Length: 335
Image (cartoon, rainbow, N blue to C red):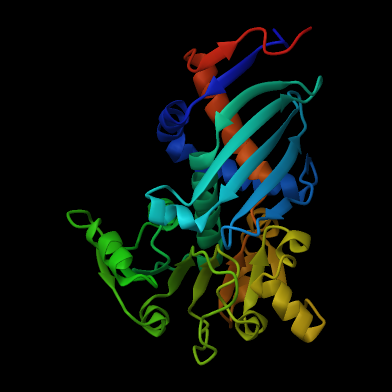
């Protein structure tokens, strides 16, 4: 094994590996959550760097470590620049590094953009499966018409299986119409609504994937016990919505930070007793969701754990190594 070499995997390499592994990713993410719950991985606090300009732009570093027979560490360096949409560029991009867990040397550098979106979508599907507790919603609400929600629809539909209609809402009506139109000719019927109230009135399962930096869902909208909300963007719901719901997170210390809706609710009430369970606990005990989440709306607010990116990146890396894909620089490091 050459510890001076580094393999470089491009977006094309990563896409090929993810496409081939798509059916496995929900279970891979579920196992990563279980390992996080039992303490066999390390996931330090993410580092946020918010830029003064352009507005709402940020870059985040997510480190992680996974032990076992073949320990490895990793880092995702992901940027979110909403202004890129006006430039014809994707809002988000990411690079990942995978390190040997024994020597600490980087062994692979890869495009992490699609890893990031697919692990997010797969985690949403894991939560939907757990929180629905066997229910089969026909209509899925979609708030935010970007690539994350497109992947969430894909993974949730495969995992839950019963969805045949989409209720679509975006602050940009044209963007919403294009998103809905893209499902023409598929087995999903998609229609846009101009008012977010209509999403809550129509759908039992609702996915939020927006660029919101503060809550905007009107307080007049009451969350109902039938609602399962995948609150992926973390800052859409009012603190009162969160307090009235049963809440599931990936990690409490992460989720109650950075002015998320959960964090604002904690600041307003001085407590966290509206936190019901972690997703890892729900996976470990399949009956927990039915016991703890019955009687109120269920909200899943995942901050996003680096260990999930690392788990998916390892799958990509293994696929590419087996097929000798990518570019290897044999003397990247000196011995």
